[in-house]
Amino acid sequence: MSAVPLRNDRPAGNGPRAVTVLGATGSIGDSTMDLLRLAPERYRVEALTAHSNVAALAKLAREFNARFAAIADPARLDELRDALGGSGIACGAGDSAIIEAAARPADWLMAAVSGAAGLKPALAAVDRGATIALANKECLVCAGDLFMQRAVDAGACILPADSEHNALFQALGSGNRAELTRVIITASGGPFRTWTAADIEQATLEQALKHPNWSMGQKITIDSASMMNKGLEVIEAAYLFALDPDQIDVLVHPQSIVHGLVEFADRSVVAQLGAPDMRIPIAHCLGWPERIVGPSVRLDLAKIGQLTFETPDFERFPGLRLAFEALRTGQGATTVFNAANEVAVAAFIARQIRFGAIARLVEATLEHWIAGGHLAPLTSADDAIAVDHDARRLAASLLPQIAAKAF
Ligand code: NDP
Ligand code: MG
Image 1 (cartoon, rainbow, N blue to C red):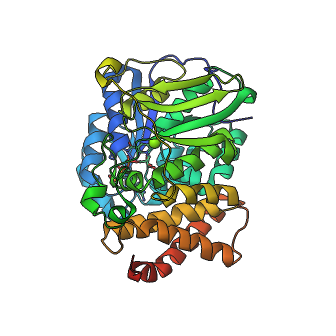
Image 2: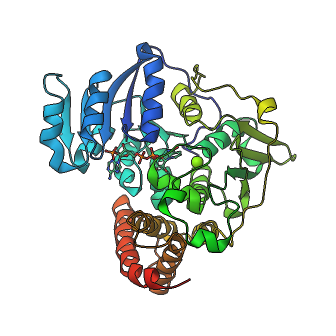
């Protein structure tokens, strides 16, 4: 039994759908609001959320006449109230308000908070059996087994919104799960694809933020440069589709046109292609089980000319190796992997560590965690969050020595 539907096996609904967007002011939120804007008669916005960007949240809430707006930063409630003054839109602040937004009745919810902070709100939607477009991969990496089991128990429907996983979701429709032998997720290789290890070590924040193909939030852009993002996606795929690590391959594909491929027992390989525009996988989730008209450019393969593929380099991009190791270790190791990476990326953004130190901090945190005998199965969301917090503290304590090490 899977919470990710195998085929278009649910009837399409009639009338406007109530939708909620968690992380409405971010990059995925922006693409989602863009799609809602295209067909206002089809959607009614129930709730929108943000972390601290009150102005953007209030603007969206007014534009879409949302019923509820929530800001995670508890100090900004008055500011949000003022910004929504006279609109009649209810509002709240703090983590509990984000959870309230997720729990309110909506037919479809986009989970696009960044980082493990998205776990509890996404679970609130899972528990009411919602249809959830899941972009927030960290919540699966942090607590994948638990998340997917709760989705099955509550009858929630998880639609993968991450482009590679959405591609796999679409390709899986042409066979049965029992016939699947392997999935392949592609990676652009990021801005450092052709760089030497020594140059990658010294890469600056500005260089890491220049993604060749995709326009995304800051955290995921840095994760793409380190290929930690692909590591997170390998783990995400394992939990979403109940796959063994050996069934997941990564293929570097600099053009970002083929997003994911599924190999079946007869050796047929089915792929999904599209321009590198997140509105394509989001539109697939928004329309599902139907197809809606999308605003993205048509794919012009003749113009692109060549699609090329390379084997990923686990030496220059150790984050990818660490992700597979964490997945094989299981039992909370992926939670630690994610937490340590969030700490490392924040430290890199704060210019406290070199780019190369991101993977070293993740590796050191995992080693200390395992050596300390802390590995244990996660039994609840609170358990996963406690592991996340403990791993962050451990990573923060290891940070000075990792930062000081010369390479
Ligand atoms: P952004 O940083 O652009 O946006 C994050 C959103 O979440 C913003 O609305 C932000 O609010 C809100 N937010 C941040 N922290 C918190 C918090 N602690 N509590 C509540 N809300 C919070 O991220 P992206 O849109 O790029 O990514 C969102 C998720 O989607 C990530 O998990 C990412 O890995 C995944 N994803 C993104 C892709 C992309 O193309 N961008 C592709 C595939 C997956 P505020 O604006 O106020 O800070
Ligand atoms: Mg992706």
